[in-house]
Length: 308
Image 1 (cartoon, one colour):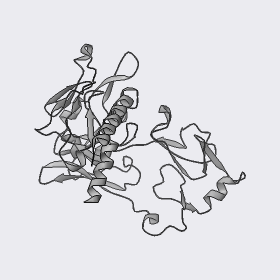
Image 2 (cartoon, helix red, strand yellow):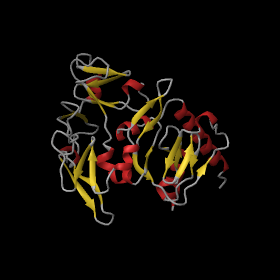
Image 3 (cartoon, rainbow, N blue to C red):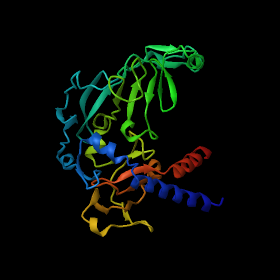
Image 4 (tube, rainbow, N blue to C red):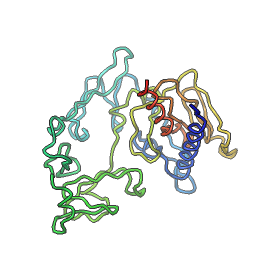
């Protein structure tokens, strides 16, 4: 088959993605916030780079969460546990002697059997409710009835108890929040109706963080990454795209990945592993490159895989 149109569209999609990153849709802001890196403010108020040097001091035989260090065998205190994780223990990978977290996840009854009705909507008491407290089977009918209590956000109505998730298309101040529709909600995403989403990267991906691996974001505006990591390899190369604009005034602003250094605008060569083939990593906001999935490439990869 003629792959030229597909490749041309893939290149266009990547260019559009990178332009989106430069224009402000940059997942690195949430990424660095999760890692607790310190922003260095630029003249326009947006961080030009972050200080993540403390990551180099993480010990292989220790676990970390919210700035605290834990020994192997220690558990997180109840006040530190995130929602839906009743316990987390610092464990050890015996083949690598590196500590990591193992957490018990809450099994909600609604996930263990059939739903009570087709298209049932789950209702919750608070944003911290892990399992639903009720179901609504007449959702469409009740939304249309004016006497039914509802909340409205971004032009959409929600029943009391329904969760509201903000994502890629939300205004910056509303991005990455989870809310529960309830009395008093007025559309401004503030407490007690809303809270910021946490990806808990130290709990889920500590071993990758220690190895200097980069998470992948499916879209530039996503709040949390998907569990596909780009880890340093001896075969990695730095690539300068043909249309890249390298700012000579910012040559000191560099991303580091393994033993490589990249100037803003440069990219990493693609990984060789199957799930890495469509991951594009670019130096946008140092010190780490930002990795985003090339959607066109990934769709083709999945199609090729299922057709085999």
